[in-house]
Image (cartoon, rainbow, N blue to C red; front, side, top):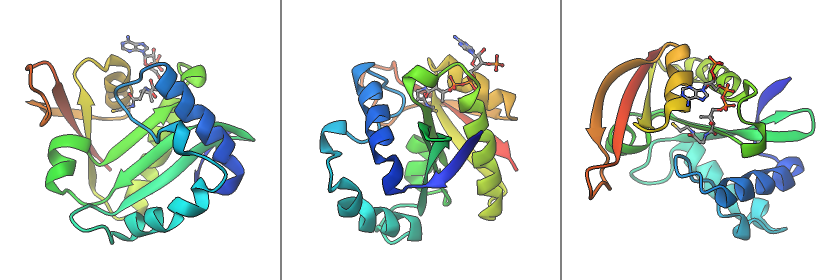
Length: 174
Ligand SMILES: CC(C)(COP(=O)(O)OP(=O)(O)OC[C@H]1O[C@@H](n2cnc3c(N)ncnc32)[C@H](O)[C@@H]1OP(=O)(O)O)[C@@H](O)C(=O)NCCC(=O)NCCS
């Protein structure tokens, strides 16, 4: 059964494998940590940074909650929730980031991560979340629409120089 849990040392090896798969498969829609940086001391080294992010102590950034998705002892993916609608959230990264490791995609995990993530967002007091999706990311758009996403508009991404990086913005009301 899939669960969203707080980051913890027990699943660091799985997290590294997930990041490695994302890099090796050139997944561009969600960029996790570079697996080369995840060594034995990585969890402790980054803990304070993630704690600060969660408490909203990083200047100019929305508070950001990070969860890992696991099924038993298997690492499946991740879920991130940004609880404030900053300029960057509205025009770039959205309220939510989610991903499933490449070898576990297409088995229903992405849908389940987003579904459980929406419950967390509601528990955080949010009434709606914004999801920004690359216009070419048909799988994620499908999952978001299945879970109630309403297309608000499409906009050019801030880093789009060739007019090809279009973002769909979806609201999900909780
Ligand atoms: C998006 C992502 C999380 C989905 O995870 P997943 O585990 O593969 O998703 P699920 O198996 O729950 O659902 C996939 C759905 O897409 C559908 N689908 C598959 N290929 C599709 C396509 N080319 N076009 C539209 N829908 C498609 C499947 O039929 C399934 O829908 P269904 O349950 O109604 O049949 C995963 O592909 C991923 O990690 N992608 C890279 C990171 C990313 O894009 N994150 C989201 C950023 S907004």
